[in-house]
Length: 483
Image 1 (tube, rainbow, N blue to C red):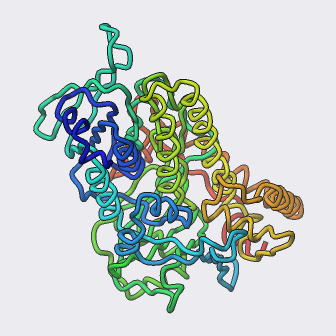
Image 2 (cartoon, one colour):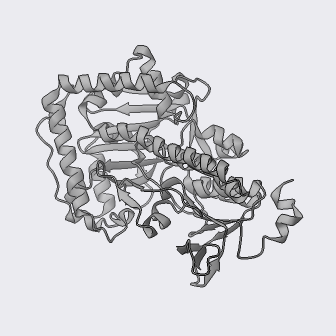
Image 3 (cartoon, rainbow, N blue to C red):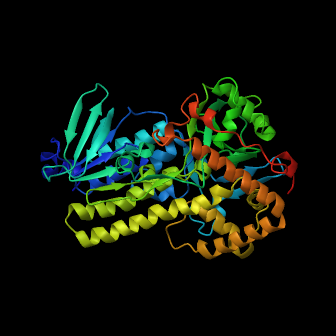
């Protein structure tokens, strides 16, 4: 019986003491709420904004598609998206374009993904949670969670709506899917910055941007430039999302407003500028800090953290939505056991969740840390399928991390080739590594612990002025042609 038609379920869905309260109506929270409600639990889903609301991160992975099948949403998602068959890499130090097609991965059964407007996509998932029986509230921000109240009862969650009215909820269990607000991680002093990576992004949407013709129209493109890389994501409505990702020190060079700085940065990538020569920016540029982080814990007796509420990595490989939704599916298994009083099964499921939450970011981070290195760039621009290593790389780029696809041994081979290539260009490789390390150190030292990391680069990038720019070492930029 569906939860929405179960009379016992309906009888208990009007109070302030639900089985589960989910904080955050993004992909992770909406997925978890839909699945738990479908299992017959009384679920409340809170979203601080009003859908539809803007969110960056439009590109999905092929392994998202089976998750949509499990939610019975594939057709609805495809209806608002543009098909993405693969990714292409463009380097100013190479004449050619390198293309990777998902259909050539180790498992050929996941040949495509989609790009979506996140405002449409996130609302679709949120409304689906309501259809599945969750009680949904927009414009409601959770402000504090008392996991161990003095009365010894259920957790106390304080919530404030857009009108400033505060309400109190007493759920049996709390799912923190608050995204980069990281509500519980901050509250429990469990959030830790990634000491190996820090970046910032500056982006906008263009109309009339040049696209690759035919079935490759929806391919995501990565353009390298001296200070980082650009994403280039075609969307179904004809617009194209374009963003620059660089170390925060680069933004010290900004003169004028963000829009001017975005256009100046695009000019540093001539092949990208060529694609945009007839395009028009559709609105002011926007910026955000991509400071990577995770948490020292992901769960407790009465709570679990999923998606970006637990960890965030650079958006380099479009992994955010997939990792968030996958963590939601894994967490629901454990939470369902908790609510049914099945302690042993719940503990096993939580341990599996912990492995999943650590494994996904770890796999993507190895590439993210090295994506601006000459060695990794040359490997991506000149791929070889020796011992099926290119197929394994494609499987990782597709998000095929949690099944039995044998990518592990091939990736050891890939890493061996990478380190051998680093040795072959050792002076340049060392200079690039040292430059990147100094940039990360400068960015982290400039970050004030008392300020939320995701707010460091608000619309006017106020704290970037505190970051001392580290100049490019000789041989790292344009002089590194064909290294």
